[in-house]
Length: 89
Image (cartoon, rainbow, N blue to C red):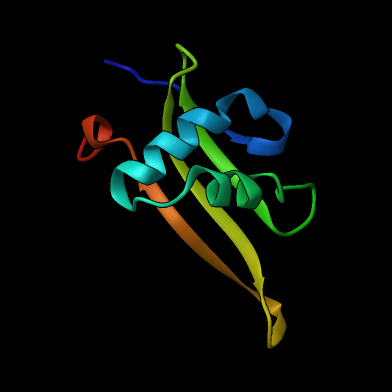
């Protein structure tokens, strides 16, 4: 069985924002307003949010990449999360 997935930038696929908020809040509950503010920061440069979606356009995972404050040569990858039903497969 073959499974195709796509890695997309969230700012170019904003219709996934609510699904990302639900995914993150399932793991780490937080205000939707605070989550949305962070998601809306995603752009072509850092900070950047990536989403992983399947062929049916269902969200599989998410991660947030930002520059480290004290080292502009380094990045930090945060909020890495995969849908529970997709873990381990």
